[in-house]
Length: 366
Image 1: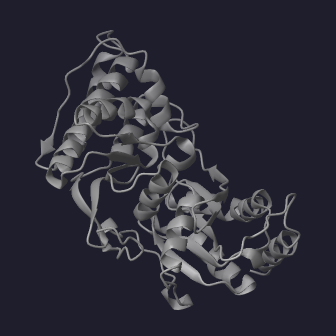
Image 2 (image 1 turned 90 degrees about the horizontal axis):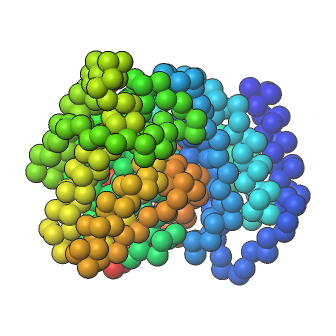
Image 3 (image 1 turned 45 degrees about the vertical axis):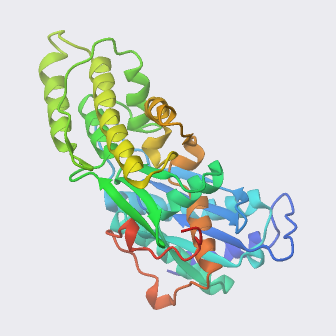
């Protein structure tokens, strides 16, 4: 629309001032701006090809307790706030659009409408700023962000988020999936249970489950479903919700007990399939990425297992575990440095985009 074009031009004009602080771009350094909007977070980050994070602002679409976020409303939220976030990213980085070498966006996986709402912005800015576009796999973005922030070289990766649960290891230019959920993701399971017991979505349902679980004193046996290298979570979700409906009001357990038991059981399943992957790959180190990776209890349980195997656990906080623009920028600039970019016709989005679909040309180690 004319209004949107005016706003885009306004962002371009304001950004040329370089924000409140000036960034002097060193010779040979490439900068990317990354755009993330695959779920309820919309984010923009600026990162160099050497891994320096210049800015990484984001906003979250938060719905009332007991509800989730729907594609259309989430996309509308992203459209309303993304230009302000673009401006914030430029200002915090102290750069102008002319300093950027490419624009990177989440191609998938994710929710269709939110993905497209962000891709449209990237296409428009690409034409205004005359910058190439690099599509990025969301999962690979998480992995590369974790590797650069933690300094992890070649770990087994546990990727746990609202829409994905995978155990991954790198081999022959691809991030291979050794184990995964066969139904719903860990974050989705926790979010659904949080809605059942009326927990707030602010800042996130998973975080509020984690805090409430600390008050739990009674462990309740729950379905533990590991199938080889994979796990199933739909059964434990149904069981936990049923327990909440039948036992909390009669005093047989508390919501805190159920949160505690749900976490302990699910995280034990994740530790088991991660250790099995480590044994298969003869690896000692583990990197946890994705929004659920912020959970301190999950990190504690994983650290015990990894320590017993003589390895090291790598994990980050909510700045980089939760969906962010910097992770898309960094994965994108790695691909861009290998000569990858997309034509305007190729800047599509897809809700299903497997981690092992990506040819990882930038890793040369094995």
